[in-house]
Image (cartoon, rainbow, N blue to C red):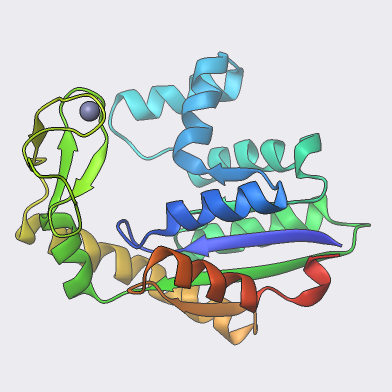
Length: 223
Ligand SMILES: [Zn+2]
């Protein structure tokens, strides 16, 4: 059985961390569109050049082009046993595009799709973002509330100065999340209506979320 997972959740929900853990344990490729597009551009392919022409101008890469790039990625050999899509689809339009992709690539394959939604309140997300600090040298991310360092101004790994990103303010964070929720609500509803969605409480700690995640994975997916 081919294992196909979609992880949906706002920035700061811990979705990326959970994807990495599951990807490692089940040896499934972790595919996020941001990295995928950057790799495609770096490869110098025709699709990469085209995508870059939009990105350079600060425009969104058209959905058809993203679909083509994703489809090509999902057809690679390391996806034969399955994959985890992290942050894609992000809108109803993308979800419908993904339907077509999966129909095409899984024509003669037994596959099972499961969608996980990392549910966390806007208040909690805003609080996490406002308390976020990053290292000016190595980019490591810290949270003022949970960090155990004595000196909360220096990076534990490299000693670099910890800074607050300009857009990590309450106002900007709130706006970002409102946009995000508006965009993903119909998507969550779609997968829920299809009986494919599992909601996870993403306000819990990393290990508990991971256990809940694994507990919700359908048994035959392990085989
Ligand atoms: Zn550092």
